Amino acid sequence: MRKLILSASSIGAFKSCPVRFRNAYVYGIRPVEDKESQRIGTNWHLLLEVASLKPGSECPECEMNIACGDVFDPEQCVICAGTGKVPDDIMEAVTRVLNKAYEGIEFNDPEAKEVERVTLLHALAGYRWYYDEQLEPVVAAEQYFSLPLLNPQTGHPVPDVFIKGRIDKLIEIANGVAVKEHKSTSKSIDPDSTYWGHLNLDVQTTMYTYAARRMQLNRILVDGYAADVTPSLINTVKYDVYHKPTIRPKKLTQGDSKKFVADGMYCGQEFEVGACECADNGHEILRAYRKVNSTPAEVEFGAKEGTFTIRETPDMFGARLLKDITERPEFYFRCIELTRTDAELKVFEQELYDIAQNMQFMIRSGRFYTNEHACEATFRCDYIGQCYNREVVDQDHVPDGFKCIFKRKDGE
Image 1: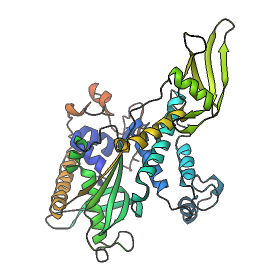
Image 2: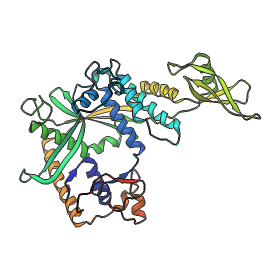
Image 3: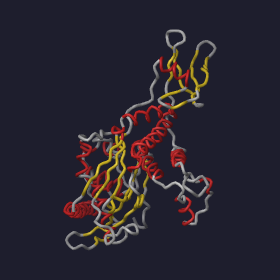
Image 4: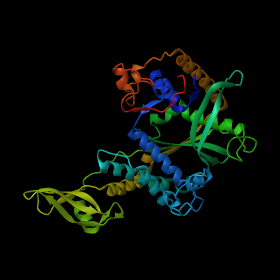
């Protein structure tokens, strides 16, 4: 049997539906394309990581390439653009990294792609404005861990079973070090929202605290932060959440459209507005638009002569989004502190062991049951089509639109 990896996502899949766990983590069969929510979450994490770099410091991307002996062109580096240093204006690096992330991604609607990109860019600008000097010093970013699962009764490692993950950040706090996790969500993050209550049961926050503490005790944490150096053991998570916007690009009113064309100002930002241009077929106007910062903005003429409305370009929408963020930042951002007691971490260690035992039983027996209540709960399961149609899914039967991420060993 191959090594068993316990991650927050694999445990979540197992708890939701053992067949989902089997398909994704035993067979390694995953959708070829990421979901929108996954793409946005991944890019949000990426931007926060870049934004946390210290201006003027050595470019980490170039340092990594040099250390690995890779052949690369420094001028193609999206962080430093060939200077070897993190730029003084970190948003320059953020913009380049974001543009690179969206290269080659196909959208049915090209404008939707640009709106998504612009939304992330302006959300990050709003995030940095809101937290400003409140952001804690970063000890380590993207802290990877791979630790053997322990038998709670003996304290000995369980053969071929590991807990793995990647902590967003380890940060300095008053009494030592804490875990910081960044999340994006469409759910309400108001203080009385149920979003926060579920964190008392959340596997990832507890696992990352548990893993960070074990690394601290084993002296494999970042230099200078081992258990015999820092005042206290790690027991805190700063849970930092970005609420994805609910507003969307819209048409301006006739009055606002007229004013915008006259002065080029929109939501506190200045735009260059060109003359109205029309496309016709010789008999009627098919499309009218004005170029706003070189991007065509749709124009609709009103019933009364001389009246018209303009639809926001992605950049205009970004300006309105940033204005909205400055007017109600708590709608978009909230960071709370979670604590895990020694007793809770001990219970969690036993829970990990029990989950691993259940997983191994199913893997060895080859018997996995479905949970029909999880197929469309919260989100549609990736494997719903195969389960509903009773299709066989394994490494010899990979459905269309999926790929197998595991390499088969000889004899398997």
